[in-house]
Length: 205
Image (cartoon, rainbow, N blue to C red; front, side, top):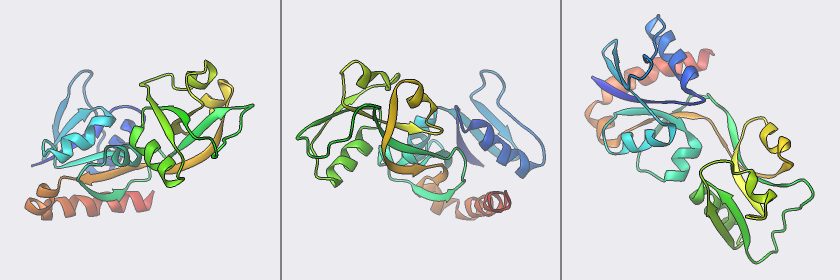
């Protein structure tokens, strides 16, 4: 039996829709249930940020998670397939009246994506002081905590509503199907069979 970690949050319903199409019937987690067994698979209902950890440590054979999370956590997993769900960007945001000055010696950036931020600024050979926040990141430039933010942008409405603008895109992201390395070799036939079926649905849609 393959164990698959599915994310809660913004891409949860779209992910469940793929498996519903695959099984020919709708299914979903009951209110507070964290484990669901259906059609010979075990599904785990976990936070988006935790999916790669469950997969890397072998608690799940497969998982669905955003490329931004994979990149941020720098985990040792196999990236099987871009599902094309939950498309968004990781971008730098600044106040509307500001400009991003790459010549400043130290730019203060508020974000929950510390590694992505540090790596991007390092690629520009620019010093950065990263301030880790877990929510309401748009507030940081407005109250002088940071010069800029790095955050997920889907429509840009949240930034605009808070007097911010996108200064530069860092990367594009969407949900990916990932696999544990040991599982991939031990259960290769099962995983590739499921991969082929999911890819067929993704390509069709």
